[in-house]
Image 1 (tube, helix red, strand yellow):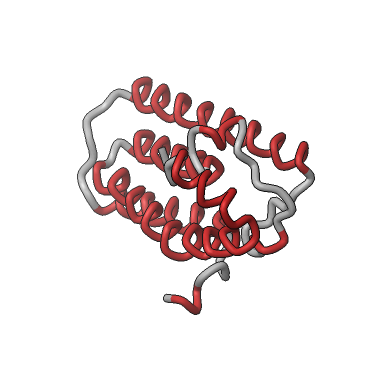
Image 2 (spheres, one colour; image 1 turned 90 degrees about the vertical axis):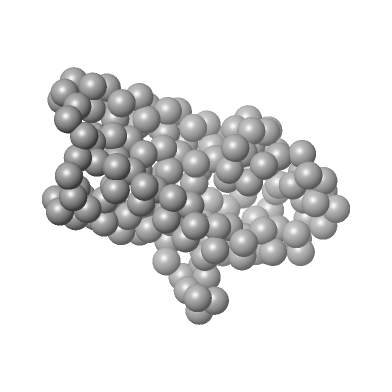
Length: 153
């Protein structure tokens, strides 16, 4: 698994998991929810994801640090305000919210459960390597930040 660390962009993982969720919905029974309930849950999750993502993008722009998750060692600033006061990984949290929204739209428990697989993959292949790089770069400041803010929520 270490060979895959920081090799596949997080957005690609979202697409992979979305496809897996769609396939799961095709072959497993779903919930008997009305279309309006499914669409409303999807919309709420996507709006929340968009709100979080825009806030994060603005924080990256304001601090003029890299947004490229494939090269965390190019970070020039430790962001700890805005959504980063709530989560150390709010962009990945936004991606998770999109997948959860898709699970609700598909009205399928297996699809929704696959969201947990996204969390596991992101922790293992993206977040842990990022944390090692940020620890090396920002030392005690990053360690203190990690003690104050949870990885996801």
